[in-house]
Image 1 (cartoon, rainbow, N blue to C red):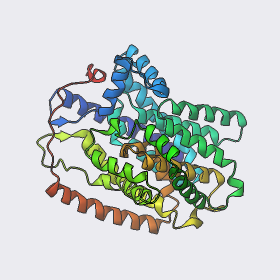
Image 2: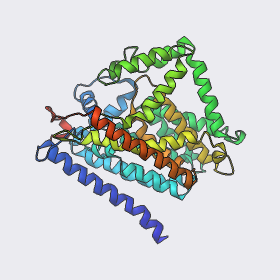
Image 3: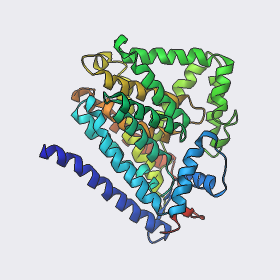
Image 4: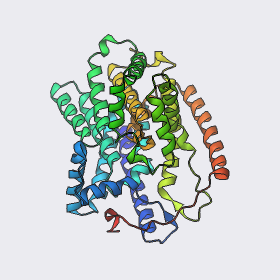
Amino acid sequence: MVEEDYQSYKWYFILLFNVFITFILIYCAKNQFLPFTNHFIPDATFYEDHVMYSLDRGVANGFTSLNKLLYSVGPQSFLFYNTILLLLSVRLCTSFKVFNSKAVTWARAVIVCNPYFLISVLGPSKECNLTFLSLFSIFFFLKRDVAFKFIAIIAAIGLIAIRPQFGLCLLCAYAIYLLLPLIKSPTLLCIFILIGYFALNSIPAVNKLVIESQGGEDLPYFKSSSIYELAVALQLMSMNPILQIPAFIAKMCLVMFTPIARPNPITSSSIPLLDWGYTIMANILFPLNFGFLLLFLYPKLTKRPEISEEAQLLLIYAFLGVLSVIISPAIQFRYLFPYAPILAACFTLHRVKIRNRIFITSLFFAITVFFITAIWLPKSWAHADVIPVFLSWL
């Protein structure tokens, strides 16, 4: 029991240490004491504008109202608020013991070692809120008492006010949970869900609804991306009943694997904190995503009594979440981050021998891609001209 408590508490201290180091690095970057740049989340400035200019974001106005409250307290309140959310998320990872004891450790490690989370604690952060609320909801849903499940559903509905598709995926997983006693293989169910998506997406009205949910055919919220033209081309392919399948495969690779091939800042005169953070997360998620896909090749690992119905629920939720990110016309790698703890937990379903092979393969790709990008995709970074309000107090 003492050893178990130590293993739990050490993650809180590691997280606080990482937040402190990140805080110092951002402070040095903002004041140009050291050659650090790229030190805040660009999307956080959009969330800040939603507050400052009272922009209407529809169902996402709930997130804007939360940020408005935090700004009224003071911009430094984001540091404390988001850090508390991450600390609670580490605690809530105990839910993953439905897989095995290792799953709890792996899930916690993915949270405390996520540079994106660490940088985002100083400003408005959807990812910190999504991670906490989803784990909070799962924690209570896995309890037997019906009252706790009701709390879980309320939390899942709250997620819709931050990122609608995220909350809907969780609610859909809860609905599917009722059918699990009749389902022998959750991976087979996931495959049927994918086939069902292809069938529905072939219907023009459904396809149009998916596109409009992302702002329209020209992807207005994605125009600044370096792969904007490719995203538009893949969206056009997705509108075709046949071409939607290769488009899906291409988008799956773009979301789950190719982020390791980022412009390499190794030759830059400054050190871009966020860009290095993305690179680290891309290399962390590469083997986790690889292992998650391999679960569909080893269906015996996900059947009862190998794993419980509760574990199967989380696997299905992870599938729905990853699927929602892939089918989104706006290709966003960071949308996977709130699902990372569950992907890490699912990874422990593989035998140690398989996990080691996945790590060796992933390491080979990571090293190869790093050197290729250093030669062919070098990039330099400059200091930000405008400092957002949430960093004004540093």
